[in-house]
Length: 398
Image (cartoon, rainbow, N blue to C red; front, top):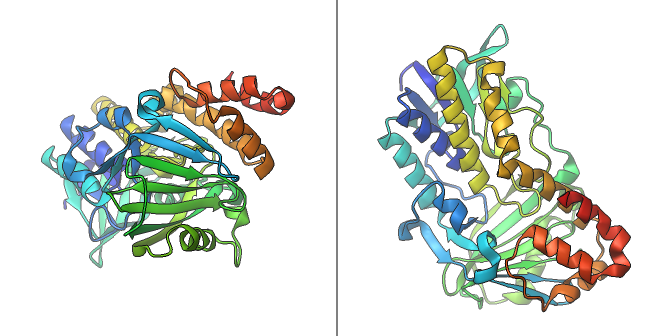
């Protein structure tokens, strides 16, 4: 690890890895630091991603694909099931990854491109001069050091500590921070080709419970509920334990993780003087599905491309870096984030009776191609008695 680089990337997840790889390939000197002692652990997500979205960034490899998904199922509170087959579900189904291997592969690619990778190294504070970020103070295997850089790309996840310490407001409202728990379970009866999503306020209030297969009898079984619903006796783990006891009483839990997922709007601004914020730290998790891997890689790559241009031009001011912020907001990803936020805000208001009514109305539909937009239009058409209420969804699509 040197003391000076063109670009310092804080965080070794998919966002940071794509940023480091892209920046190094552009000829920059790059350092990627990761606070944990090993890339990819602990796993902190359900590990699902759409096939086409993944292929945009990396060629699929059987080494880090745990399961290929053929269908998705939405299960309403009364058991009504909406089936989405692969030929119609498009990017709504895909792969379940092995993040331990996947994340390491991405970081290895960054290293092969020329980036320095340093683990067990935590950014403790930004180095700032006259309000401009010039690098980071770090603690590397217990030893303090300074790493200076023309641009720091903050990819430190939901906590977003680096951006906050640099002066950006990264606060997430309690109701928009999903409280999550997940078990990796084995010896359970599942459909190995289907990702299942359970809805209902008795199952997962203002959220959903998921089963993501990782083999014939193995799956990530997890839940996300609104932070404001989390209290003694009704925490995410409590709901998950009740579901597991009922549905998988003989299953074996071999891993357990817990954490938070922001389902708010993205940060108001994701750049500062000498600073860029990407991935979960920028709050670009899909607020409707909670998915963030693809968005993380998209913002990581775009940030590195813009940073490279600014470094070449000798100007890394906030104004110069703004094409990154404007670029992702104007992209399809940015448009979908805003739309899905508005859709999410509607669905969290529904009681179980309305969820059942909506599910029953579309349980047997055959859409030419599934998408959130097509599904919402079908809901509006099939539920005239809820037309005024569903207008919020229609407005979200406009």
